[in-house]
Length: 508
Image (cartoon, rainbow, N blue to C red; front, side, top):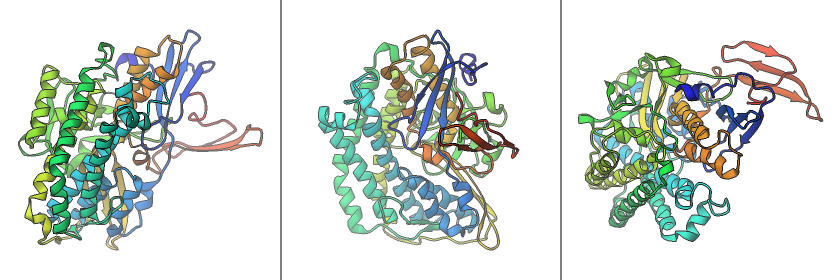
């Protein structure tokens, strides 16, 4: 944390401060809120992004047969189920001794994954973020939505829909369904791609590639056309983490971990996925249900980092597809080769990844391995396994331990949005200091905070799943709203009781 934002995490004396709440944060997946505490001079004293959903998926998985897990964990989310499906499968490949999976299974899984990248990136950019970029952060709320985009920019809206549809079709032919499919299993795949499905998608590629190129054009044009005041919008210098392939290539399905410092220096490289716990740990705070990952060597305050498209684009040395690589080089040149930490640049990076996804899909559709061949591998059983994948929003980690009875005994999930928790809080505080501190608060100004959060494309449902490590509060109120009793279990397991609300329910 920077010194200027560190003081905004917790107000020295919250009593008597004016409280403003954005609840819920709109145009994101899941439920979260932002709270601001201001003094009598409208000066910010506290700014927090709270994740207020609680979903106990890590505990739900314990006691279930391991082969159910790749299908179960998809229910974390309806937007990025493929990412969980594949990360769980990769972890359990180790458990069943099926790693590496056969070539055909690897290619089909990759095809499924890049279909997910395309559909998710298209959904976020065109449906959720483009209203702010096309109309301005302070535009009328009635226009600042996907309906407004469809009316004012019908062709862009149509292409966004069609790009997402293409990605969903890729998912369908590889997993069996567009949402919550069953194609990937521990040790490989249970289906190959039908020739007629492959041919149908190949026929669409020229048009889809043109749409993807156009999406990059639009994102670049919107970014470079931003008012000068937004050049450093939400700028939060941070280390960047992602998977990297051979030769430093961008790799979204499998690879080793690389961590680059905020100034561009590579700090960690070639770090094996199965050893991730030696690299990062997780902290908790009492005012949110989402954990805070950090680098072990630096600790919770200094060790936070960023994941996702903006991190991946700058963490790799090149993108292994020609059109996207040319666009990456243009991105780098536009910023003078310097590391970019302004959050709005994430949209440009995201569309470059979308283009890369379409190019990889085109390559895989030409690979005969997807049509058949050995799909399952077996070997010596192991007790545990880790699966790491680059989900649309960033690095996704699944870890499982399985007993001799084939039942899961432990589950740990660190999703992309959780990795970005501190980064999102820092971005919100940066924007609040620049635009809201000392000002009369209006809806357009508050939307600036939401714009900063949306740039990360957070999946808040995915990110709030731990049970036993997070504080849990139960409050009993009377018919008149008076607090009659409450029980608070802290993150350390201590229990407190009394008629005082939990800090998440008081002025935050």
